[in-house]
Length: 88
Length: 243
Length: 203
Image (tube, rainbow over all chains, first blue to last red; front, side, top):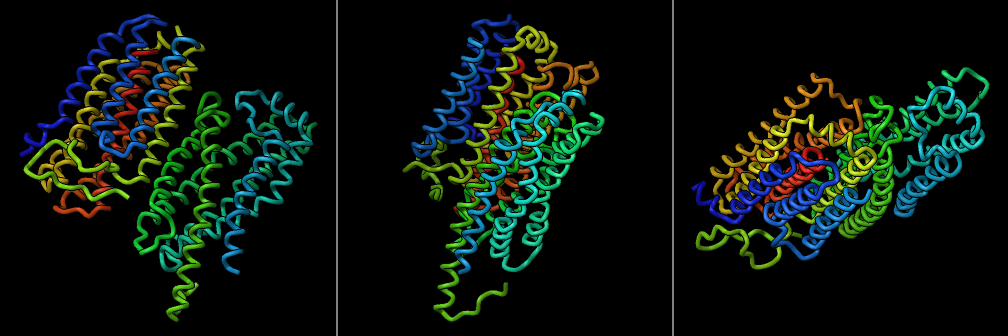
């Protein structure tokens, strides 16, 4: 019974998240200061955040205003953190 | 008559918030806060250079901070309405409300004492100044406990027309969580958890201002709910609940 | 207010097919969740600002972190989130047994995270890395400490969810509380994803 529950989108999303985490780790563990790899890692982090919000928090099926606010948050987070990394 | 006084109490709270900012920021200049990492001499220098501003601003605060009381009394009354009688939660609200103006007046006393005699030993001035900041920024327990109880009351309110909407409960929890870092200032002299830091000062200050304004608005609405219920009861000739 | 969740007919397990937009939890919860996300966003930006003041220091200090613990904690939280979202679905489908099992699993994950954090903190302090050592470690302990505070609250929320999962048919309000509680746990996961990236990888 439990296993049939797991045969759903959320499990697929989880596998993706785990994969992205591992890739981020492999890429990001060793890199110098001010590298493009860090930018990639930030992108991956925001992508993961977006998946958690849309599929785990179920914002994909939420009213537009909630989803829009969340997507705006993701974009702002990515822009601010990446911008600060590259240009401060 | 009740309604006018109660709504005035709510807005008096907001007015006092403005007053607090004017007194501490524009008059006394104590916001933005001085650094805890300064030496005793540097701290004493601040209190002697700006002594007059500081003393005037804090003296005004000592006089006026008690005007927070009606706002808090209204808050306690609304909790009592939800609880149904003067129970544990309402009475705790009252007790903690008593400490609220002290948070401002007690710290102000230490602040004026620090600025009172510029010619004294700088170490003594610094000690008094430290007490000001500790009480002003570090005494977070009473208000956080108050808002957690308020949030709890909002959630358990099972009446047909509740005094507060449910989102207000979540709002209070948000405020409580963000107010907590203030308690860490006793452990740090620099960084975001010092009394001039981002997490321990600026965020709690911002959140406090938002909380007072939002709560004042919600209290005004709750007063309307109560007035409507009173009217409905009068029409049905029911007894009013005891105070 | 949120609609009562409908049980999908014919055993359709996908949670995506809903007749109309549904607010996960209730609108009020999102005031808290978004509020927390925004404030943590400010914390993240503050960290990045501090990093820009001393990039070499931050990078050097970052390398003294045990990235294996960070990675494991990330995977543990991701798994716990999967368990929570599946448990919520089980509750909707009136399968209290499965739901309780999943929530217990998520709870165990939460405790594992706390355990690893305790190990990590102790190891760091024993190696001489204390919050007052430098700016990196100051922010490391403060940010992960604040997050840990959220994890502890989250564990409490999970226990609350477990008590609700025992029922077969939940009212709309109770279901909203369950969904809201689940979303809080996902928030804890979400914040850690960013923290892991910032503290362990990007610094």
